[in-house]
Image (cartoon, rainbow, N blue to C red; front, side, top):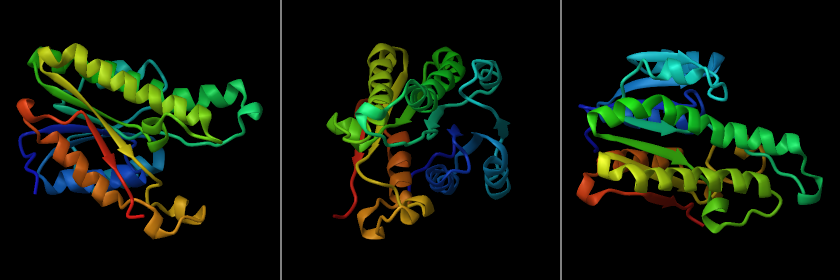
Length: 225
């Protein structure tokens, strides 16, 4: 099992299905958690997982950056995201704004919040969750979602190349299929077709424990079919 007993890790999207699996894995590995989320899902996460800080923030709001900068963390695991599908010709500007605000703007604000401390201590890791469509650079019926998740990957990898010499690394997690959540089962996905969220969480912990000379920048996780 990964050992993260000396690490403080900020987890965004706390209370979501993936974030809950990640929180459990990180807690099992001994990490100190900073939970960032909204409303009732955040409250449930805070009740379940001990955390050094619990922050109820809308990461689409630029004001969230100042709140995040008051907390010192060694890593950021950003799980905030949204999925919608629409025909290309029916997509609207509102669709675009919703997906880019939720998938990319939240990441940007989270990074702006944690980065100053990481640069001062010359050590840190930022992980963003992208998508299989972005890894393939094609998402029929979900072009805007694909574009927003591709932006996540490009941003994190660019950050990595820019800041690795200063001790801050980036890593992109690509679930190459639907994650096994209640919502996805209701949508008709069979469990064999989906990715185990605990498996994804173990991949997150693996990436967080890699040394600089054996770091991981991209992880693609596949279902069993």
